[in-house]
Length: 393
Image 1 (cartoon, rainbow, N blue to C red):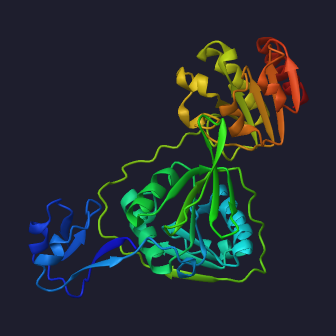
Image 2 (cartoon, rainbow, N blue to C red; image 1 turned 45 degrees about the horizontal axis):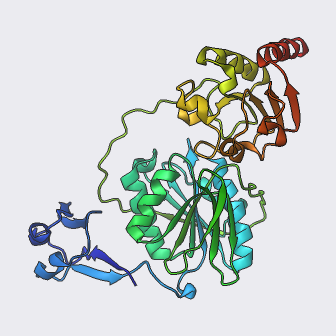
Image 3 (cartoon, rainbow, N blue to C red; image 1 turned 90 degrees about the vertical axis):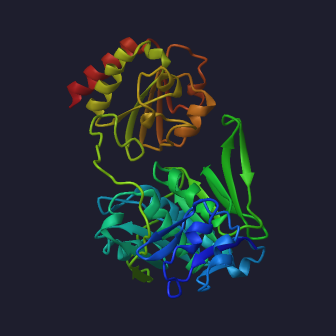
């Protein structure tokens, strides 16, 4: 078993002896109580000098006994008090895994004035929902979110923890895994179970040229972040029954302050949730020619994406990159303009319902996955498409 450290608040007097003894400056007095910071390496010096036996080093985080950990916990993101798509996708996947493991599905949602989301998550298949409602949780704050999630995991001991590989999830999950001293597989595209009941986590590796399968046989919980739009969303069932547990989080310290949130509102926004995406590649020739892509996206009511090549060239921002090192999308319609079809790009869009490829090279790899392929000059084809669509509308 790994070791963990905690302060018994009822015994702590805030005398500061432990603070002076810590060689790593990993203790702070907050509200008259000693607080252990993330820099602690469990050397035990603080415990040795505490005259009140208020510091305890205990075992947590590593076990080979699966029966000590039960349930699949899904961290469900919410934006403006609305559930995100990736959270519902993870709930659907958790239900499938839970059926194999014969366990329950739990969900946790953090935010401000999010009480109503508990019942909604029950209808999407959660057997138990933990709701932490606090004004400090309104927007993502790494310190606050990680403290709440770690405390919940230590209390409930879930066997598996699933988090979306979003901008928030990719920061939150490593922090939580590091504090719990457990393993984490990032950017999974598939989840399953082994015959022994371990979580089998699949993710692209070596530039997408191989798919690595990873297990975490000794540490608990087993943690994974999962790419958005690669799993099927949970179906809503108003008859599903479950329990909503509302709790007040204990947040000791938040070292950052959110000053302002700036939301992008152009045709280059909301890539993961879009039903229509028009993406441009090197074949456009210059960043100025992205106006063609934006115009086509506007006519279709879609958004703009791009390949890694144009992101690296500075033609479009990374937040709109489609592919292995960008975002995974699965729209109803994906139009690839001047994109050759490198494997790294295909990983991010090949599950789209309908793929239309426009490229002057008939041997381009993008045609291998395209539903419809148009071989020709995009500077002639796209304006013709725009003109025809405007006539129809």
